[in-house]
Amino acid sequence: MTKNVLFVCVENAGRSQMAEAFFRKFSEGKFKVHSAGTVPSGNLNPVVVEVMKEIGIDITNQSPKTLSQSMISSSYKTVNMGCMDKESCPALFVSDVIDWNIPDPKEKTIEQVRNIRDQIKSEVLNFITSMNNEK
Image (cartoon, rainbow, N blue to C red):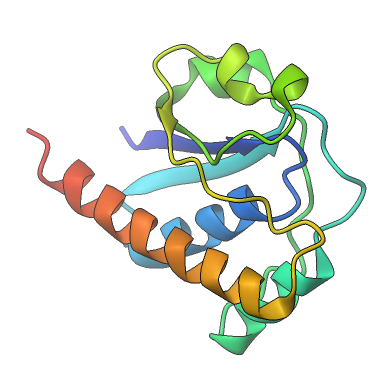
């Protein structure tokens, strides 16, 4: 049975979307991956879409989704991307969450968003390695 991995943040418009895309690309189909937010935005962050396209990953067909109890309960691992909005922080609603504390790309320059993208890619690759080494 394939295990579910869930990436969460508040708006599901940037960080968790990038993490989902990187995880899907690099996990070789060994896991199912989803992302969601506690207060989802209406659209993806356009700068996030642009910096992902720069490295050959198209997320234009993804959309922000609302975090649900069924997503949480069916997840093998849940990663919180970081919280800037303490009232809506997914870590308040999810037990046994891994917290990466990655800055929110909202209202950041394209260069700052590239750095966030690269940080997320590195975290995802390390996460996949650790999951593959689990017995």
